[in-house]
Length: 353
Image 1 (tube, rainbow, N blue to C red):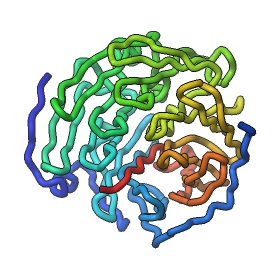
Image 2: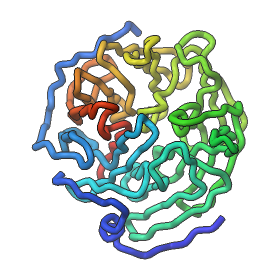
Image 3: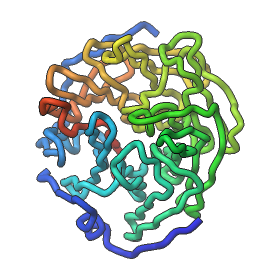
């Protein structure tokens, strides 16, 4: 393992990044689309896309986000700098809970797993470049903000990748630990960094991943939970699948609940399921004709729902009964004749210090 500290101010680091452009920047429930933007403040523009953020509404703040483009094969990470957002050289610049640490996976092309990442300590204003024992994608922070989880791969000559397990990285020592776990699923193209990725399973010493290719919520679909040695601890059966494209995290901050999706046959509309982590029982089903994804948790009592109406996309805070009570982000989807312009795929809300 090799790492090298680079002392710099965080603002200077952001401004020297390639391409930085600051911007002024029980029973099924039916989603209530009439959200009330309580505590709303002036909306601010998000860089790189035709979106605006309802900033400082609610208890969490948007810390970073990733835009998808190039037919789903490219992600561009943006990071908050005060009341603006700047483009980074990372596909994701993921801010940890508490806001101190940022994890950056370099490069925008999703089909390229990377053998190094950057860790940025915003308190000491240092960046550490960490060499890894295997190529990785898909960063996620533990709920305490101290451990980073990455999905690990083996590369093949045809540019496909086989998932071999996961890597954990503690900010205390910054030593990467490769753990081989789970079935050896092979992925390619836009599936890299999404399908069969690992998530934290409600605590820093547990992880979860989809076990097989059944993702329809039937009795065939299984999610596997592992400890940090790679030992399988349990299965969840028939609970649905993690939203591997959109979710920043699938477990609630307390670890008592997790969210999954079950999609229609055409993969457009999604039913969101709220599942008990202890029993695996589906407690709630949130449905709506314009629900497109589960984007993560907003505290323990709310989730973030991604909806699409015509040529617009909306991220809403929704309680566990399915009632939307806060519009977080509104985005106009711009179709350029071949595909959509860069637009939001993943959003990362954290509680400010």
